[in-house]
Image (cartoon, rainbow, N blue to C red):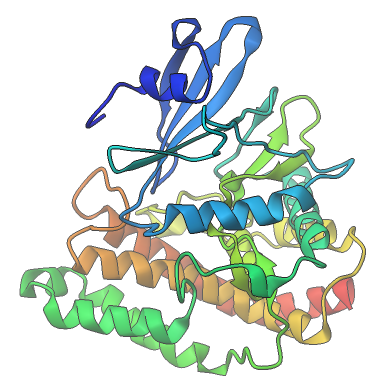
Length: 350
């Protein structure tokens, strides 16, 4: 805390701070997040939005407010935001931005899985998310992180970081830099021109899905800050990189990084269990999308490493480089499965 205690923030959201306690949750790489617990099993999530990353938190909340009413169904749990004393769902205090949202009881998240039931449910809920939002006007959604998954933009950022990085950093990262150039050639063939623009989550890693503790059923997607326009392969590829590989994102032993075909099939089966919403062009883009997303995350991690770790939180100096190398390794393994993925998504989703 920089300016004021967390309990005073809770008071601003009409919560009696004397009846609540809080603990820090450390899984997120961007925002500061706390679990707030009170009497009668009341629980909430308190977050300080990282406005060094999200330059316009009010715009971010506008996107969430616009889409959230649609994200409710019999098999999709709705998240709600508490209002402040003056009726806002985001508190601005001393230059910091805070919000409180409901905590869904008896729920959990998974960083990775080996369970095909979890993989199926991840596919089902992501398909459900897109089904609920398919009639939402994407043009109303604002780009809170402009060019977030734009390959040309991320490539330019990488080149700038490479130009300005310290020589010793470039030497340490030489292998990753060479791999980046290799993938940039491979991904020239990913053509977005024929793809429909959709309202996307844009950060569908497995631990952004809530599951029921009791049934393992997926409940909803969380961490809605990156809701923006995009292509479905963004959400597909981002999920694949964490669902079919049970190694952590910064795994240093690359022998532990796998592309599990059974988990992939289960995920696609879960996606296919929804009413059809994908165009033919969407389906064709998915196999290369499963390569693109781990690569683009790896490229961003490499860029951040070269820029002295300004974006992602790190617990040790070379963690961003380890993230990059791990993600590139998975992207290579996904590329080797491109024919398998093409056959399975065509047979399951067409």
